[in-house]
Image 1 (cartoon, one colour):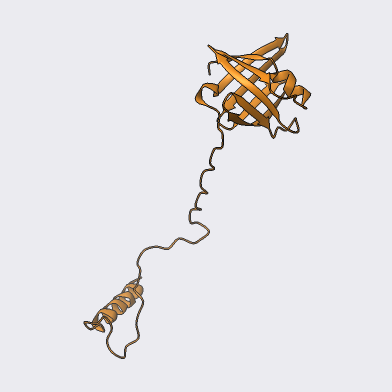
Image 2 (cartoon, helix red, strand yellow; image 1 turned 30 degrees about the vertical axis):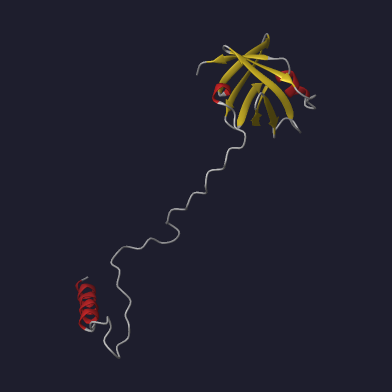
Length: 155
């Protein structure tokens, strides 16, 4: 340790002593500045985070949250709506992409359904109602949304 410090002192003293007003003595090789800061191996350096994706047509605040409906005995549907998605639980659980265009919304990219469903939504008090805008090719999605009224559930 003492040898390294002594060597470092010689390097620093030599580079300071060899400098003239112009920065480097004529005829002497230029030396790079010595950094005493610890270096972090590239494998341990933090990875920069990608930019957050832009939310295209996110759900408005009044749609967000948890909603539930009872279709019949032992048949309860629950949806949890986030700005760009919905998770529905009714016999099975599925994640669905959600885009909102005014009073219309598009449900797509579900694990249980192909294509998309387009529904008009309205809220009155704590009731959320869906009405099909175009026929939904996914029968399970249509039965869970077309003409169905959900009630807001407090978390």
